[in-house]
Length: 256
Figure 1 (cartoon, one colour):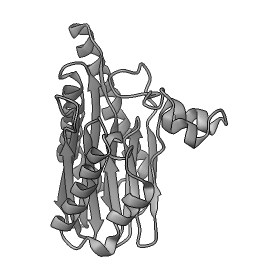
Figure 2: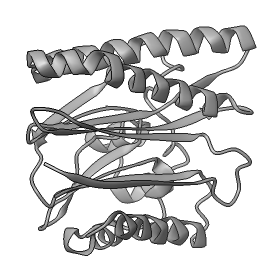
Figure 3: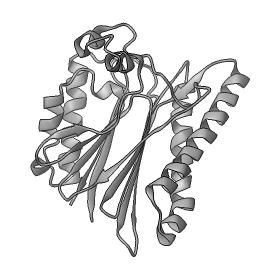
Figure 4: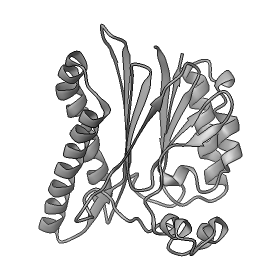
């Protein structure tokens, strides 16, 4: 399996600091090519959110460089991977929370982590950054937003239309560094040729529609890294034209 990929981030139209962070790493192995991606959306006053998101990115980069190779060559299953990633998340949650206490402030970050290996994808999510897959047929959201409004929708207390304008729509149920207890969600499935995997911070998806994302990332349009960059840029600019006030980050990987 081969990949073409690109990530695009923008500070947006209102904030002074970009607190989003993203990572793309590809490894060529004796078994197969492997793609590893992480996207984080930090939060906190001053540069605290930027620090939180970058810290989690570095921790997962270290995991991929140092711990994943022996897992790959000895053979791993989804349970082992979920355990390793959860350990990284719990460790970072403790460290970021402890650092925030020394500053007398709060900081935290969402995280969505993805590994594509051996014809499968593995994804972990904390918070409301998302992962989608765009097959040749349709766009499908893989992750589930860990937010107050999403929980209320599931309970039947709120409609999706009400959630879009509810003042609590950005309230997270958990995030790394600001939650005493973390319960990551873990997903896995088949990764097929021509699939496009998309990861994004919430600033990327508020002002564009599901249909616009689906159209922009149609696999037959994405033949090169430049094509992916142009698709990402077009939707980022559209978000800004529609006055999205958050940082905006998107990452896309096509299997070829």
